Length: 548
Image 1 (tube, rainbow, N blue to C red):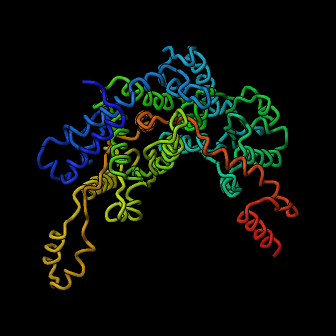
Image 2 (cartoon, one colour):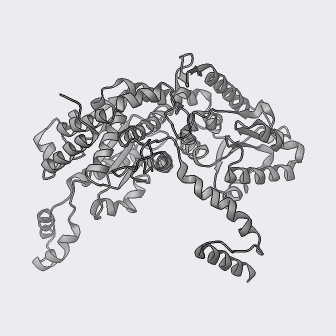
Image 3 (cartoon, rainbow, N blue to C red):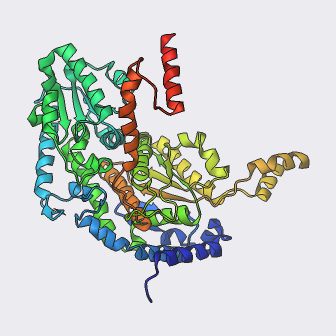
């Protein structure tokens, strides 16, 4: 049978949706006692359960047909081959090389980079061990007690998220801090209780020109110079950058500069030297386990059949929801307080990657692309936005993330946490009908009139889709797996939509305008001629407030 085209595959999915839209997910479970067995996949101790989505085995076949029509397998192999997949910037996207086993050849743009990666990793590890052991100290001879990472975007979100997630593995006498916002409050609040004599700053900026990062770095430098003297700057700063001249001008010694490559995108850079603060905190061995978890998923996504491939299924089910059912948002709810920053990390990963409106060849896309990603830890989210998830007019698919066992936490608390996670998934799927509500209220002794007035407010439609990722505990390896699962999910969806997930031109215009407006904002006498009415009006209003 000839392979379907993408439009034909979508047409088949649309027809299939019409055919199953009257079948409730609870009925699918009733029809098939083994539904969970059929609709979950394991990767060692990690379980991906997608049985609570309204889909059947036929749905998966149709989605695999779409993947084949879109050439997913070929695009995946092109990505892993180290070819220039990122066409608008003419570079590969080969962050997977950073987590490949040591000694395994990895080709990027026709060259084996495994030796370069291993050398840079060894340099990071040695520096981290020197800080952790106290062999590397500040200008006054005191060991470092605090590490402040200064970056933004991928140079902040990944390491900050992972440091919090792996906090039980971070030495208690070595605290990690992360500064990203150009708002001076971010840096001021971070530094107010730190001793410059025992603080190490890591400036993470590939070009050493990122406006927010370099503004914060200059202010931190001034704090060190004022407290300890200009000569102390070199003892309290390291850099992750490729611009040695700019780093040297800042006052950072060459042996404290760590690099990565242009085939590592910012939002994928946590696996590189950008993870230096994390390596210092958890130690090189635990960071190596984190890398190994990422590689586990790299191997799985290449080797597993499409219909038993976790990132592929995550991506295809996301396309099913986004394009066929029209769901515009997606919630990620980790039932782990230490994963509090994981949804924010995924916001950048997903929305910066797939927030595109043209195909690779520049043609406008025909269908919606990346959904809006949001989330908070459970159970906090239950007391915030879950009302909309359960009874709102918009249906929002959910990913629940939960560990079987707590890490450095009370088992009783974790049992209650785990029960909440299961309950929310069941409630979203099952709902509660009007007749069920009426019977419940009647059992509570309410009158017929009271029941008629109250019952509609207590109805839950149900059939709100969710998936669950379960693993034994939040170890460095399982965190690496989680991150890589979502990286590859995003790639799978980009392949279906035929968009470039590795550029981010959408952030450039705002930067350009900020560079133009910065001098005008700073100078109260600067002319406002040529500015749009709102911008000119707001600058004038600010000047008025400042003059009061």
